[in-house]
Length: 171
Image 1 (cartoon, one colour):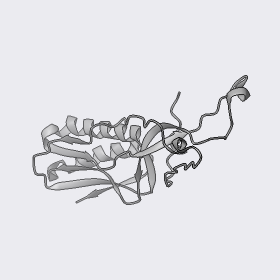
Image 2 (image 1 turned 120 degrees about the horizontal axis):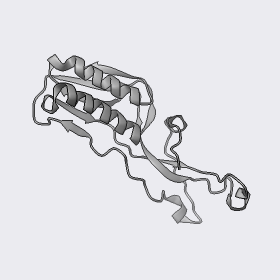
Image 3 (image 1 turned 90 degrees about the vertical axis):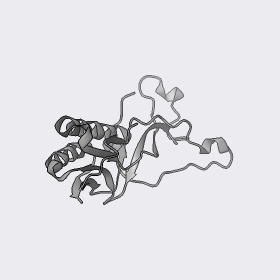
Image 4 (image 1 turned 60 degrees about the vertical axis):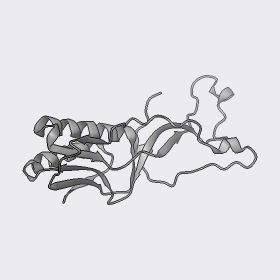
């Protein structure tokens, strides 16, 4: 099954939990899918750096785990290629906890026989997302002041992979 467009799930909402008094087993999300992002810290963890750059969200939004993973890969590869692994420390600050569900309806000939419409429309788990508030940091890079321009470009590349406009703050 193909992945739905990100715009269908980027709106930040309170996680809905179905509560069934007659059948308690219906109240649980069955089977949480594996998250696409596995590595949250990259680079040199031991060295002290004098500059920190943060990628900050401009809107409250849900970011899927595959968008976080693609942003991580792009920015880490750029940093690694331009300044080397020993000259930065890169960290993803958000974690995809929120389970995304979708209620897929059957289409085609004879679908009305086994499609129950919106009855029991809780949905099956389809992915995970991180819920990010406005002004919250998504990722940061620690590096030396001489590599400031490279860090800014790396975070800009990560920003292009995320479904929200972001700002880069230097501390």
